[in-house]
Length: 593
Ligand SMILES: *[C@@H]1O[C@H](CO)[C@@H](O)[C@H](O)[C@H]1NC(C)=O
Ligand SMILES: *[C@@H]1O[C@H](CO)[C@@H](O)[C@H](O)[C@H]1NC(C)=O
Ligand SMILES: *[C@@H]1O[C@H](CO)[C@@H](O)[C@H](O)[C@H]1NC(C)=O
Ligand SMILES: *[C@@H]1O[C@H](CO)[C@@H](O)[C@H](O)[C@H]1NC(C)=O
Ligand SMILES: *[C@@H]1O[C@H](CO)[C@@H](O)[C@H](O)[C@H]1NC(C)=O
Ligand SMILES: *[C@@H]1O[C@H](CO)[C@@H](O)[C@H](O)[C@H]1NC(C)=O
Ligand SMILES: *[C@@H]1O[C@H](CO)[C@@H](O)[C@H](O)[C@H]1NC(C)=O
Ligand SMILES: *[C@@H]1O[C@H](CO)[C@@H](O)[C@H](O)[C@H]1NC(C)=O
Image (cartoon, rainbow, N blue to C red):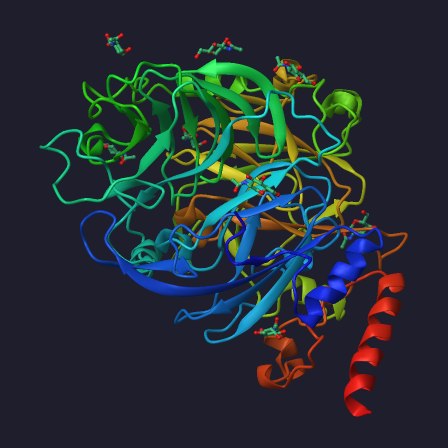
């Protein structure tokens, strides 16, 4: 159901125009109007201000199909600036729509801004979230489903239904308080609870769960098979997901079909998304527990940090009972790493296109550049708590990188990010990775922190080719998976361990590479990768008509109230522009006669 969406064949003059575009061979447009505002709710029994979209928390699901054009008019009714980012959406050659500080000016409180992007050549499960200032800790997230086009078969039987599940750590303090604490070097501590779809835990145990907390119930029919899209949208906690007595058949992660395998539980790290097929093959003598519990936290907080929802068969005879299904050994990172290594690409399955996912033989391609990115736990730099990659803590300039590049404003950023950790004092700087267009780069994340970090790269899916404990060396390449490493956009790196990825830099733009753990991201653990196509440096569309200007370019910003009706119009091909102009002339001609 496309709640809040107007599909392409309804009234409204503007919409009619796009429908015309669509009917002359273009890809369809879908339109959404989203208002971000605070609502008061109490997921853990304590009243809190939560970020809702159109009054909903979690927000509405963006349910679209490969190659559709998505137009989302975001109205900011919060008390601070906002940007939504589309985790895993590649925005091919269009980083203008990425919704992070390096590409967009924030949408001021009280303003609106319209995103427009095409989900080109993608399928799978993703999510969106507010990217600034710890706002994700207050909600504002929702799912993205990209269905395959009818001409491309799924590599499994069509499931009977599709269910999105968000799991997340949660604190009862506000995101503003959390970010103050983090600035002051205070550890996040054990979360106050784990939410499932914005709800607190079912009272599976009267001592560890207080009464009066609303929980999530997922209703299913016996014998049917459901596709569960599970996203860890949390702040910083890795979560183990499992369903009592039910297998999770892993089929997809972040836009790639995997080798299909059953798991009894899956570690899902911050920012990661998975699809599981779950068949309701148990008897209905009772309901069953759905559990998301913290991993690698100190055991004292374990019972507190457990999310429990209910799987309810329509013919169920009673409540869920018995102990929660077993969790793998709390501190067994080896188990978790082996599980991660077992997730592989189904090389013979087609994804957004009919050719098999394995037809891009990444293992045979010569690597052009190697980056070893070392992080460290938070440290004081010039009296402030900061996190770094290769000794550089990212400083966002007041003028977004993309705008500075477009307007040739020098001195906003440098393209001198070091290839290796540097033997020099850490610093705060705006230093970017100078990516070579169509280069094939290898990035090794070396985690020197004590917590699992998840790294995410915007604009791309990368191949996860290896991970191990200890320090990466050239010899570590011997153990790389050169054949069916999974392509995804978010990978975990265990403490004291490394993860290696390969990325083909064919998407021009300026792209954020970050840790998804909000505490570490907020303190500067991110970098941007600039990818410029030297032949046609105009291959990326120039500034969108509706761009917001800020920083050194704020004088270009016009008042929001006086915008021409089509100023936020999606960019269209010249052919359809002609159709558009003709219609505009006809339209206004009609009224001026
Ligand atoms: C998504 O939309 C398609 C139609 O385009 C519909 O068949 C499907 O049921 C929808 N999925 C969800 C989860 O709403
Ligand atoms: C703000 O919303 C209005 C419609 O409510 C729209 O016409 C306008 O283009 C939007 N502004 C931007 C900058 O997207
Ligand atoms: C997964 O488990 C289900 C039972 O829940 C079984 O029917 C199916 O054959 C298993 N599939 C694989 C690929 O192991
Ligand atoms: C139903 O399944 C549960 C869990 O597998 C089992 O303990 C119970 O004995 C079963 N009941 C019947 C009537 O088959
Ligand atoms: C766990 O507890 C130990 C000792 O109390 C402490 O050193 C460590 O930092 C804690 N780890 C986490 C993740 O809280
Ligand atoms: C891989 O995908 C194909 C469809 O192309 C499917 O038939 C096959 O079962 C999948 N293999 C595994 C191991 O998941
Ligand atoms: C960035 O890399 C390109 C090649 O991809 C090179 O031509 C250019 O000089 C580099 N810029 C800097 C500042 O190093
Ligand atoms: C971090 O680096 C230091 C110095 O090289 C090393 O002693 C320590 O074991 C490392 N810690 C982790 C978690 O990698």
